[in-house]
Image 1 (cartoon, helix red, strand yellow):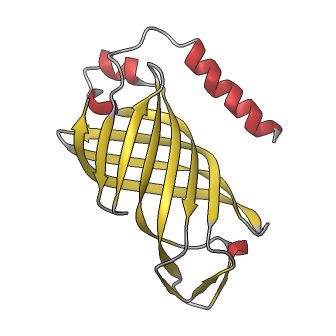
Image 2: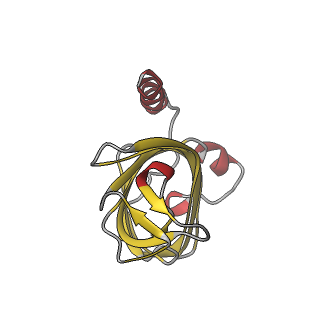
Length: 183
């Protein structure tokens, strides 16, 4: 818990003591393709955004949250993915002439992913119909016209509503989609 509080303090410090920012971050509504869903990214300050992504995705279960058979295991379920992103390299990207439009840049974030009752599954029985994964990530997102790409990676602490929990060292996220509206 102390490490989490230290990370939050550092995240806020970056935001408070940051230098003059490049053009403002934008509010963007996106449609994601890989995990079909709709995402809204809202600026919180000149360097941070809050992102809410909801849809239906394919996921594997964490060790302590399910019973599995051998072989490939997965489930398809609705999800809610929330991220607080701190963009740290927009100034240097702007100086180098690189794209910063539509919130392009590298970031640190805190992410909370929630999976709900599965629609379908293969070789897996979940212990609860809802689970959570929370942790810090490092990521990058780029915009190429209306095309959007996001990748992030980081460790997660996972748990469900029945008290099952654990730690997973490397969780990955890849989103490919299109910006529907920017303002």
